[in-house]
Length: 123
Image 1 (cartoon, rainbow, N blue to C red):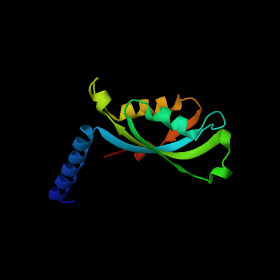
Image 2: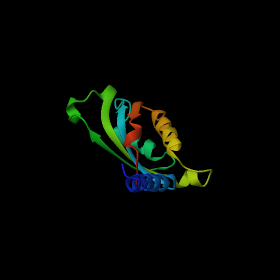
Image 3: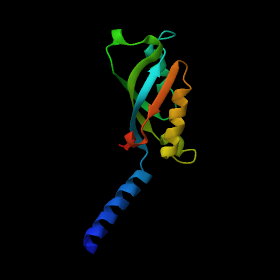
């Protein structure tokens, strides 16, 4: 590899790293399993929207509603996360996204929430 090619690769990697370091909005998706026998999915999603930093929540059902097990209702959860509430109190990073994922898991009637860290992308 030529030195000029290596410089260009390093330059692009640094640009991406710096852009992400100062990024405060991210998109992520994960697998959400809820128990909708106890309360409707809309209420569960409303509780997720109430988590600091979560600004947009949408879901995609993996199976037809009538074919789902209501104890283990499975969807893909799409989130938009805004770091502003965290920037005011010490900074925002991907580690805060882990905290948000843990808060989602604590929402009543959320059975499970899993995500791939690679699904987190800056906006």
